[in-house]
Picture 1 (cartoon, one colour):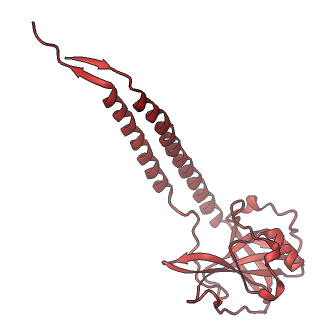
Picture 2 (tube, rainbow, N blue to C red; picture 1 turned 45 degrees about the horizontal axis):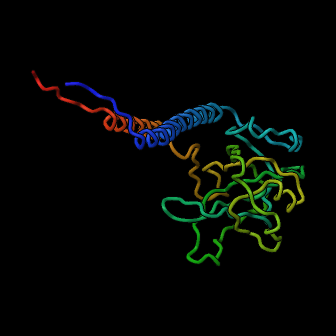
Picture 3 (cartoon, rainbow, N blue to C red; picture 1 turned 30 degrees about the vertical axis):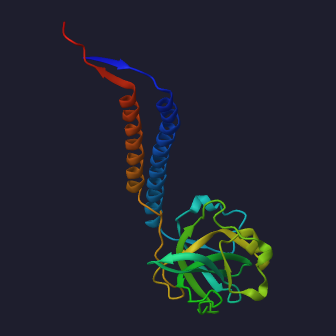
Length: 245
């Protein structure tokens, strides 16, 4: 029995197109797994550190958001009761609702930090806003610094009018918020700790899915790539039986 390798155009073209795509997707998932692992490690390390105190002396310009991602932060002041943003299309336990983000006026300062107070359920009709209260009293808050990914927080400034608050937005632009409030706004969000009574449902996710899940996806893509190679070989190799003389 002899083996003959015969190249066919169609399998070659299909393999040349599909194989690099599958391999790229596999390596992309491995990169995602690595990034998630690093994110979780950074979160766990900073979660065990003492909380930083944000004061009037901490100017907005000098605060490098990326340097304090996931740090524990404590701040005193009061909520801006006149302004709250409802971040749309947030799901909790298969129910649609909003994140309530309220500006917090830092004590003895004109600076503002945006506080994500958690999830609140939407009403049946879009025209009805969920009801919630905001205390005007001076309080101290503690939470985790969250720096959204680039372009995650974005909204057209022109769509927000003072009389519309609380206003429903898809996302938030820190620069736009600063213009609306006429105050300096820190370039990060404080995710309110679960035990604080001024918040709502808080089930903060550090990463949307585990590193192991991304690794599993990578294995699936690489397996599909292997199948493509095997199919190519099957279509190209022919077995010929030689007759005995």
